[in-house]
Image (tube, rainbow, N blue to C red; front, top):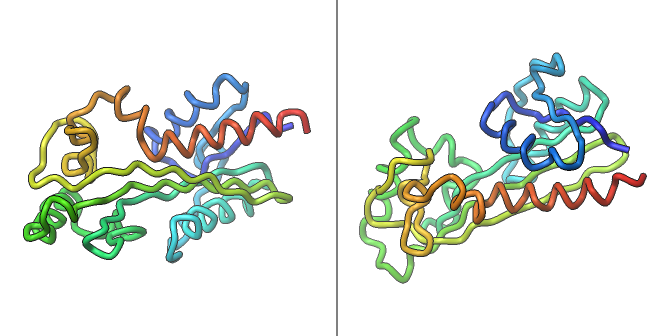
Length: 193
C-alpha cells in the first residue's frame, strides 16, 4: 500500500496542488528536498513523458520509494506543435507571451488552435506508469488577465484567457488537474495492494 510519495520537484505551487488533490487518499506527499534529495537531471527528452520519467527516475534512484514527477508545456498547431517540451526555454522568463504573439501575428483565427499538456510519471521500482491531461483552446491576439503565469494570458478557452479565470475555474479545466485526477484514480485503485 502506498502511504507516502516523493514528488520530484521543489515547486511549492505544484506540491500544494498535488497535496490537496491526494489528501483524501491519506497519502503524504513530500518534495524531493524534504526527502533529502538534491538532483537536477537534464531534461533532454523529446516528449513530456520522457522528461517526466527522467526526473522521477533520478529521484527514485536516491530514495527507493514511490516517486511522481511531471512535465508540461504548450503546443501550438500553427507552430507545428512548438514550443512543446521547450516551453520554459522558448523565450527569456517573462517574455514568452510576447514572443508567441509575435510568431502568431499573421495567423488567422481559425488556425490558432493550441493545447497545454501535462504528463505525470509514477515509478515505484516495480511499476512505471503515466497519466496525461490536456486543455484545448486557442491563442488570443493579445495578452489579457492578471491571474496565472507563463502562457496563461494568451491561452483562451470559452472566451476567456486562463489569466482571466479564477484559480477555481482554471483548476476545473487545466491539463495538470486532469492528469492529477487520473493519478488520484490510479493510486486509489492501488490502495488494496
